[in-house]
Image 1 (cartoon, rainbow, N blue to C red):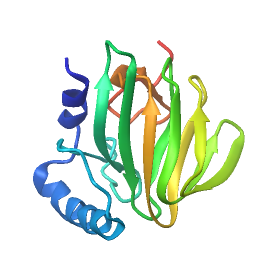
Image 2 (tube, rainbow, N blue to C red):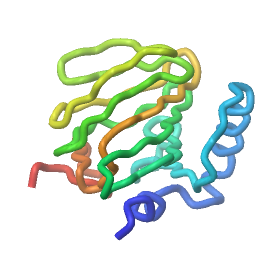
Image 3 (spheres, rainbow, N blue to C red):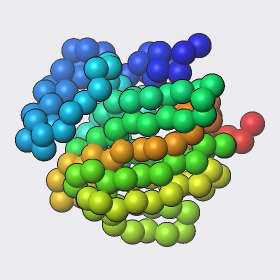
Length: 163
């Protein structure tokens, strides 16, 4: 199955997503950031608490055969992408706008616009927007949904174990 479709299948419904997308687009316009012409994923990770656990993803590229991917990850102030790791994927975060708190293995640090951080496979990580919303450019190996391993077993995508 197409990886983007897997993501869209568990995204908020258009009615649920509408107010968040309106706020997102208002912020993007203020920042004057161009977005790719793709359908965004408005994810609450199946937890039903979008403004606590969620994000908006715009996939720029997910070239599985060529071995690379890139996407924008947007989080509202205080919003967290849940603790997870990847079985294989290595990511690099470039902070486009805002500030995020990162929990990465046993390290905890803040990143701001212009900062870069490699996220290795096999290491649990999460990020939270602080002092306002934030936009991250993720450059990585392609996104394979089942490569995600979440600590919270309520999350219905990816895996919750090494199996």
